[in-house]
Image 1: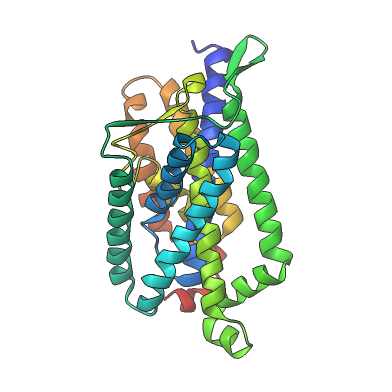
Image 2 (image 1 turned 90 degrees about the horizontal axis):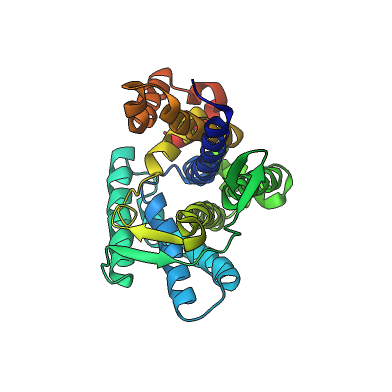
Length: 307
């Protein structure tokens, strides 16, 4: 029989993982909805921000100062990728864009490996509180609770901004009908760059929430598994984005927490079901693709624009 303590610990960890998936998914949906790019370079672009964080803290900058500077660096890396690469392939077939995004992912991952000196392990200084919080008889990492809270707060502010601000309305106009938006005087390149900057900053924030705190009070480690084009969390993030059909931002947020909880709660399942934990994301992605969830959330104009 499973006691309440491990259930609570795993649930909190699942919510923390879900928060990371949710932020990654929000960035994926924003970029795809605005520019039609299925961004397989999302993890690698966020990884550039992590490298900037490592280098800044290595030079003696406080972690609290290095964090926002690294986020800005990540956002700039995304804008650079759009301006130099994806802007020039606008209108190309989706398979070509996907192949190009995989190439960009490999480039950024290789740059990250080079900057880190091709080390097998690289230590990261934590920037969130690393102690434990006592909830009854259960000790929970403070960083996990803060990660979930930060993700929810950032997502809420972003969704409100996207709905009510002038820039958010311009982004929605570009997503629904790029040609009509241009005729209305909206600079599609400017707002597409903004989408890539925000989306990449969300990816950077997701990685900077999880990687520097993976070891608790000891900080975190970047391993050779992290410094790869798709990293260790991008596939579940794509699954979360598919919950909203790659076009619905709030449902992508919900999907992130669903994927996080589903993956971590599988630990408590009896064998052999617990061994399927790493396969949950892939199975759910196949189901979501077969259902074609975009039909429930995208307008006809948005579907035509994405096609």
